[in-house]
Length: 250
Image 1 (tube, rainbow, N blue to C red):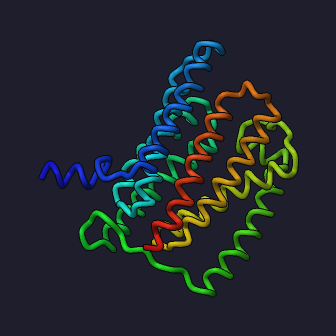
Image 2: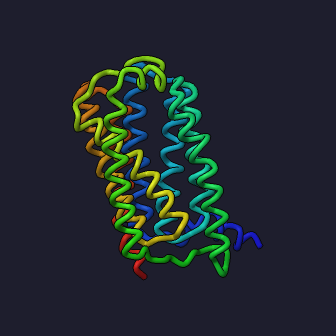
């Protein structure tokens, strides 16, 4: 019973060197950046540490997802609760809504669907998207990215969503931000449906995240440690997503 519980929840004993290496590398790099920020930058508050822990939960969740393990949603749930807590502490209302109102139910719904479509309640069987679904998805995704990137530039929207007008970034930055949001929603739906193609979407999301946070770090300066942590996290997740592309073909 204890062995079966461990297999359902942890799986660490079954991880290969690549999977363990990804988690360890992410932990070491982000932890060093965190310590640097605390010591050199003299910034040490609960939000910083919570973001670090939530990031680790998120990486574990993604790696487990590449292995088709249903337990990925347990770790994912812990991650989004943590990220939502950081957003709440930072008074970022929009992100609180995203993590606590959208992602928490999304994780629980995905957990239900995957368990329903699993014979052993441990691993899920992937499916494949068909042609017309690809066309509809591409048209809707591009349309919503263009629409939302335009909406983000409107001062009234910024005042309503963020409580203030945010710093003006380049047009490309707004497009990348909108792409991350819309593609993440598409990826969530693909995850519910167990589509193999969700990993291609994941690679796109992580690529956009890397580009977005690189632009933000460039704008704010290389001393923006939180931005660097997001870049490292996104790189780790992109490598995991590429790994997931191949793993879900088996």
